[in-house]
Image 1 (cartoon, rainbow, N blue to C red):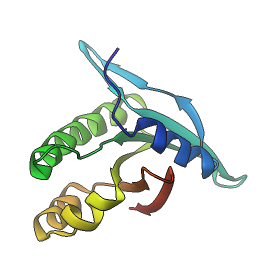
Image 2: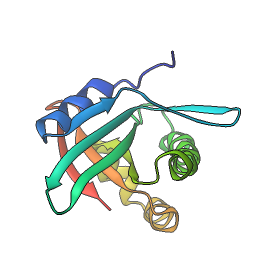
Image 3: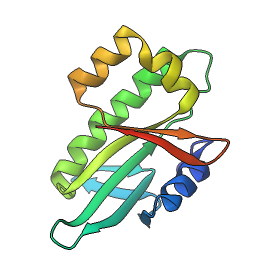
Length: 138
């Protein structure tokens, strides 16, 4: 089993507080010989006419001394997982969960903003202390 991120449970509890039902922890995907595990899969009924909303969440703590190194790793995983979801579960949207302090500092840099826009990253900003989702960025 792969190691869980430091703030895995905080993000899970935050999603549950927002009435998401965790359907897989982790979400395991396979395409030929390649296997991956995305941290969480969640589902929420939005409205009868809209059906079911499904997401996959890759959780990152950004606690190393180098946020850019953490970002490189997170971005690489995000892009690979996005391909796997397109093949296996095309109706599931992928989000990268990042802590509030990292979002307020590193993710406000011009470089990070351009990378987010260019790669169409969807973000969940979470507070690891209160275990709450602060904002969703599509």
